[in-house]
Length: 291
Image (cartoon, rainbow, N blue to C red):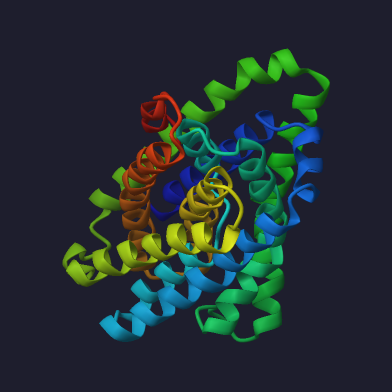
Protein backbone atom coordinates (compact mmCIF):
# COMPACT_ATOMS: atom_id res chain seq x y z
CA UNK A 1 0.00 0.00 0.00
CA UNK A 2 2.80 2.43 0.91
CA UNK A 3 4.65 1.67 -2.34
CA UNK A 4 1.52 2.26 -4.42
CA UNK A 5 0.87 5.53 -2.59
CA UNK A 6 4.44 6.72 -3.24
CA UNK A 7 4.12 5.88 -6.94
CA UNK A 8 0.86 7.82 -7.23
CA UNK A 9 2.35 10.81 -5.42
CA UNK A 10 5.36 10.77 -7.74
CA UNK A 11 3.17 10.60 -10.85
CA UNK A 12 0.98 13.41 -9.51
CA UNK A 13 3.91 15.75 -8.89
CA UNK A 14 5.69 15.03 -12.18
CA UNK A 15 2.56 15.42 -14.31
CA UNK A 16 1.50 18.59 -12.49
CA UNK A 17 4.87 20.32 -12.89
CA UNK A 18 5.11 19.20 -16.52
CA UNK A 19 1.71 20.77 -17.20
CA UNK A 20 2.92 24.03 -15.64
CA UNK A 21 5.91 24.05 -17.97
CA UNK A 22 3.66 23.47 -20.97
CA UNK A 23 1.72 26.66 -20.14
CA UNK A 24 4.82 28.86 -19.80
CA UNK A 25 7.18 30.61 -22.23
CA UNK A 26 10.62 32.14 -21.98
CA UNK A 27 8.95 35.56 -22.23
CA UNK A 28 6.94 34.88 -19.06
CA UNK A 29 10.16 33.95 -17.24
CA UNK A 30 11.77 37.23 -18.30
CA UNK A 31 8.79 39.11 -16.87
CA UNK A 32 9.95 38.05 -13.38
CA UNK A 33 12.38 40.95 -13.47
CA UNK A 34 9.91 43.57 -14.69
CA UNK A 35 7.97 44.06 -11.43
CA UNK A 36 10.55 43.64 -8.64
CA UNK A 37 8.57 45.60 -6.05
CA UNK A 38 5.48 43.42 -6.29
CA UNK A 39 7.56 40.26 -6.50
CA UNK A 40 9.45 41.21 -3.36
CA UNK A 41 6.20 41.76 -1.51
CA UNK A 42 4.97 38.36 -2.64
CA UNK A 43 8.19 36.67 -1.54
CA UNK A 44 8.06 38.26 1.93
CA UNK A 45 4.43 37.23 2.33
CA UNK A 46 5.08 33.70 1.08
CA UNK A 47 8.27 32.89 2.93
CA UNK A 48 7.92 34.98 6.10
CA UNK A 49 4.31 35.93 6.91
CA UNK A 50 2.69 32.58 6.10
CA UNK A 51 5.23 30.29 7.86
CA UNK A 52 5.21 32.53 10.95
CA UNK A 53 1.40 32.43 11.01
CA UNK A 54 1.51 28.63 10.83
CA UNK A 55 4.06 28.49 13.64
CA UNK A 56 1.87 30.77 15.78
CA UNK A 57 -1.21 28.61 15.19
CA UNK A 58 0.74 25.48 16.11
CA UNK A 59 1.68 27.01 19.45
CA UNK A 60 -1.73 28.57 20.16
CA UNK A 61 -3.70 25.42 19.28
CA UNK A 62 -1.09 22.95 20.62
CA UNK A 63 -1.22 20.84 17.47
CA UNK A 64 0.33 17.34 17.51
CA UNK A 65 3.84 17.14 16.04
CA UNK A 66 2.91 15.27 12.80
CA UNK A 67 0.02 17.67 12.15
CA UNK A 68 2.29 20.64 12.87
CA UNK A 69 4.86 19.30 10.40
CA UNK A 70 2.25 19.01 7.64
CA UNK A 71 0.93 22.52 8.29
CA UNK A 72 4.47 23.90 8.12
CA UNK A 73 5.06 22.03 4.86
CA UNK A 74 2.15 23.84 3.25
CA UNK A 75 3.07 27.18 4.80
CA UNK A 76 6.69 26.95 3.65
CA UNK A 77 5.89 26.04 0.03
CA UNK A 78 4.35 28.84 -2.07
CA UNK A 79 3.96 28.55 -5.82
CA UNK A 80 0.90 26.41 -6.59
CA UNK A 81 0.16 26.29 -10.35
CA UNK A 82 -3.54 26.99 -9.80
CA UNK A 83 -2.65 30.53 -8.71
CA UNK A 84 -2.40 32.03 -12.21
CA UNK A 85 -5.70 30.39 -13.14
CA UNK A 86 -7.48 32.14 -10.26
CA UNK A 87 -5.69 35.39 -11.07
CA UNK A 88 -6.92 35.19 -14.66
CA UNK A 89 -10.46 34.52 -13.47
CA UNK A 90 -10.29 37.51 -11.14
CA UNK A 91 -9.15 39.81 -13.94
CA UNK A 92 -5.91 40.59 -12.07
CA UNK A 93 -2.36 40.81 -13.43
CA UNK A 94 -1.63 37.41 -15.00
CA UNK A 95 1.93 38.33 -16.01
CA UNK A 96 2.78 39.17 -12.40
CA UNK A 97 1.28 35.91 -11.16
CA UNK A 98 3.21 33.79 -13.65
CA UNK A 99 6.40 35.70 -12.84
CA UNK A 100 5.90 35.06 -9.11
CA UNK A 101 5.16 31.39 -9.79
CA UNK A 102 8.39 30.92 -11.70
CA UNK A 103 10.38 32.85 -9.10
CA UNK A 104 9.18 30.83 -6.10
CA UNK A 105 9.55 27.49 -7.89
CA UNK A 106 13.23 28.24 -8.31
CA UNK A 107 13.63 29.58 -4.76
CA UNK A 108 11.68 26.63 -3.30
CA UNK A 109 14.57 24.28 -4.06
CA UNK A 110 16.48 25.73 -1.10
CA UNK A 111 14.06 28.05 0.71
CA UNK A 112 11.40 25.44 1.57
CA UNK A 113 13.80 22.93 3.16
CA UNK A 114 15.64 25.78 4.89
CA UNK A 115 12.40 27.22 6.30
CA UNK A 116 11.40 23.79 7.61
CA UNK A 117 14.79 23.40 9.21
CA UNK A 118 14.61 26.81 10.89
CA UNK A 119 11.13 26.07 12.23
CA UNK A 120 12.17 22.63 13.45
CA UNK A 121 10.06 20.51 11.10
CA UNK A 122 12.90 18.82 9.22
CA UNK A 123 13.42 15.22 10.39
CA UNK A 124 16.69 13.31 10.39
CA UNK A 125 20.06 13.44 12.06
CA UNK A 126 21.70 16.36 10.28
CA UNK A 127 20.15 19.53 8.91
CA UNK A 128 22.62 19.79 6.02
CA UNK A 129 21.93 16.22 4.92
CA UNK A 130 18.19 16.86 5.08
CA UNK A 131 18.48 20.09 3.10
CA UNK A 132 20.46 18.34 0.37
CA UNK A 133 18.08 15.38 0.28
CA UNK A 134 14.99 17.62 0.04
CA UNK A 135 16.65 19.81 -2.60
CA UNK A 136 17.46 16.71 -4.66
CA UNK A 137 13.85 15.56 -4.35
CA UNK A 138 12.54 18.95 -5.51
CA UNK A 139 14.92 19.03 -8.48
CA UNK A 140 14.07 15.50 -9.60
CA UNK A 141 10.30 15.72 -9.24
CA UNK A 142 9.65 19.42 -9.91
CA UNK A 143 12.44 21.31 -11.65
CA UNK A 144 13.21 18.69 -14.30
CA UNK A 145 9.54 18.08 -15.36
CA UNK A 146 8.96 21.86 -15.35
CA UNK A 147 11.99 22.41 -17.60
CA UNK A 148 10.95 19.64 -19.99
CA UNK A 149 7.49 21.15 -20.31
CA UNK A 150 8.95 24.62 -20.89
CA UNK A 151 11.28 23.36 -23.63
CA UNK A 152 8.38 21.66 -25.39
CA UNK A 153 6.32 24.83 -25.06
CA UNK A 154 9.08 26.88 -26.70
CA UNK A 155 9.93 24.49 -29.52
CA UNK A 156 6.55 22.88 -30.28
CA UNK A 157 3.95 25.37 -29.05
CA UNK A 158 0.99 23.78 -30.81
CA UNK A 159 1.83 20.35 -29.40
CA UNK A 160 2.28 21.86 -25.93
CA UNK A 161 -1.14 23.53 -26.07
CA UNK A 162 -2.75 20.21 -26.97
CA UNK A 163 -0.86 18.28 -24.29
CA UNK A 164 -1.39 20.72 -21.40
CA UNK A 165 -5.09 19.96 -20.69
CA UNK A 166 -4.41 16.22 -20.71
CA UNK A 167 -1.45 16.66 -18.37
CA UNK A 168 -3.62 18.64 -15.94
CA UNK A 169 -6.38 16.02 -16.06
CA UNK A 170 -3.88 13.25 -15.39
CA UNK A 171 -2.44 15.19 -12.44
CA UNK A 172 -5.95 15.70 -11.05
CA UNK A 173 -6.65 11.97 -11.39
CA UNK A 174 -3.45 11.15 -9.53
CA UNK A 175 -4.29 13.58 -6.72
CA UNK A 176 -7.78 12.09 -6.33
CA UNK A 177 -6.20 8.62 -6.26
CA UNK A 178 -3.83 9.68 -3.47
CA UNK A 179 -6.72 11.15 -1.45
CA UNK A 180 -8.77 7.96 -1.85
CA UNK A 181 -5.84 5.70 -0.96
CA UNK A 182 -5.00 7.68 2.18
CA UNK A 183 -8.67 7.75 3.20
CA UNK A 184 -9.18 3.98 2.92
CA UNK A 185 -5.75 2.86 4.12
CA UNK A 186 -6.75 3.05 7.77
CA UNK A 187 -3.26 4.27 8.71
CA UNK A 188 -4.46 7.61 10.03
CA UNK A 189 -7.01 8.50 12.67
CA UNK A 190 -9.08 11.33 11.19
CA UNK A 191 -10.30 12.36 14.64
CA UNK A 192 -6.75 13.33 15.62
CA UNK A 193 -6.91 16.34 13.28
CA UNK A 194 -10.02 17.78 14.91
CA UNK A 195 -11.53 21.21 14.47
CA UNK A 196 -8.28 22.84 15.61
CA UNK A 197 -6.51 21.69 12.46
CA UNK A 198 -9.24 23.18 10.28
CA UNK A 199 -9.02 26.55 12.02
CA UNK A 200 -5.22 26.48 11.75
CA UNK A 201 -5.44 25.86 8.00
CA UNK A 202 -8.02 28.62 7.56
CA UNK A 203 -5.88 31.09 9.54
CA UNK A 204 -2.85 30.34 7.36
CA UNK A 205 -4.86 30.85 4.17
CA UNK A 206 -6.28 34.16 5.39
CA UNK A 207 -2.77 35.33 6.30
CA UNK A 208 -1.53 34.27 2.86
CA UNK A 209 -4.11 36.30 0.95
CA UNK A 210 -4.14 39.36 3.22
CA UNK A 211 -0.36 39.37 3.56
CA UNK A 212 0.12 39.16 -0.20
CA UNK A 213 -2.47 41.89 -0.82
CA UNK A 214 -0.93 44.32 1.70
CA UNK A 215 2.73 43.72 0.90
CA UNK A 216 2.39 43.74 -2.90
CA UNK A 217 1.49 47.42 -3.18
CA UNK A 218 0.43 48.97 -6.45
CA UNK A 219 -3.01 48.71 -8.02
CA UNK A 220 -5.82 46.43 -6.89
CA UNK A 221 -5.07 44.24 -9.88
CA UNK A 222 -1.46 43.77 -8.73
CA UNK A 223 -2.46 43.30 -5.09
CA UNK A 224 -5.05 40.67 -6.04
CA UNK A 225 -2.52 38.91 -8.26
CA UNK A 226 -0.01 38.54 -5.44
CA UNK A 227 -2.66 37.76 -2.83
CA UNK A 228 -4.25 34.97 -4.88
CA UNK A 229 -0.89 33.57 -6.00
CA UNK A 230 0.28 33.53 -2.39
CA UNK A 231 -2.89 31.77 -1.24
CA UNK A 232 -2.34 28.78 -3.53
CA UNK A 233 0.54 26.88 -2.00
CA UNK A 234 2.56 24.25 -3.85
CA UNK A 235 0.62 21.16 -2.86
CA UNK A 236 2.68 19.07 -5.24
CA UNK A 237 5.76 19.93 -3.18
CA UNK A 238 3.94 19.54 0.14
CA UNK A 239 2.47 16.16 -0.81
CA UNK A 240 5.82 14.99 -2.13
CA UNK A 241 7.79 15.96 0.99
CA UNK A 242 5.08 14.70 3.35
CA UNK A 243 5.08 11.35 1.58
CA UNK A 244 8.83 10.88 1.18
CA UNK A 245 10.42 12.72 4.13
CA UNK A 246 7.85 12.41 6.96
CA UNK A 247 6.90 8.84 7.96
CA UNK A 248 3.80 9.63 10.07
CA UNK A 249 0.63 9.42 7.87
CA UNK A 250 -0.93 12.31 9.80
CA UNK A 251 1.54 14.66 8.11
CA UNK A 252 0.22 13.74 4.67
CA UNK A 253 -3.34 13.83 5.97
CA UNK A 254 -3.12 17.47 7.11
CA UNK A 255 -1.56 18.37 3.75
CA UNK A 256 -4.59 16.87 2.01
CA UNK A 257 -6.91 18.75 4.39
CA UNK A 258 -5.05 21.93 3.47
CA UNK A 259 -5.71 21.22 -0.21
CA UNK A 260 -9.39 20.58 0.46
CA UNK A 261 -9.81 23.95 2.17
CA UNK A 262 -7.37 25.90 -0.03
CA UNK A 263 -9.06 25.44 -3.39
CA UNK A 264 -12.59 26.66 -2.47
CA UNK A 265 -11.06 29.44 -0.34
CA UNK A 266 -8.96 30.54 -3.30
CA UNK A 267 -11.97 30.55 -5.61
CA UNK A 268 -13.92 32.64 -3.09
CA UNK A 269 -11.05 35.14 -2.90
CA UNK A 270 -10.91 35.28 -6.70
CA UNK A 271 -14.61 36.17 -6.83
CA UNK A 272 -14.13 38.83 -4.15
CA UNK A 273 -11.08 40.22 -5.95
CA UNK A 274 -12.96 40.39 -9.25
CA UNK A 275 -15.61 42.54 -7.59
CA UNK A 276 -13.00 44.83 -6.01
CA UNK A 277 -11.14 45.22 -9.29
CA UNK A 278 -14.41 45.84 -11.13
CA UNK A 279 -13.85 43.58 -14.11
CA UNK A 280 -16.53 41.74 -16.11
CA UNK A 281 -17.59 38.33 -14.90
CA UNK A 282 -14.97 35.75 -15.97
CA UNK A 283 -15.07 31.99 -16.03
CA UNK A 284 -13.84 31.52 -12.48
CA UNK A 285 -15.60 28.18 -12.26
CA UNK A 286 -12.97 26.75 -14.61
CA UNK A 287 -10.77 26.55 -11.51
CA UNK A 288 -12.85 23.64 -10.27
CA UNK A 289 -11.62 21.53 -13.16
CA UNK A 290 -7.90 21.98 -12.62
CA UNK A 291 -5.44 21.31 -9.84
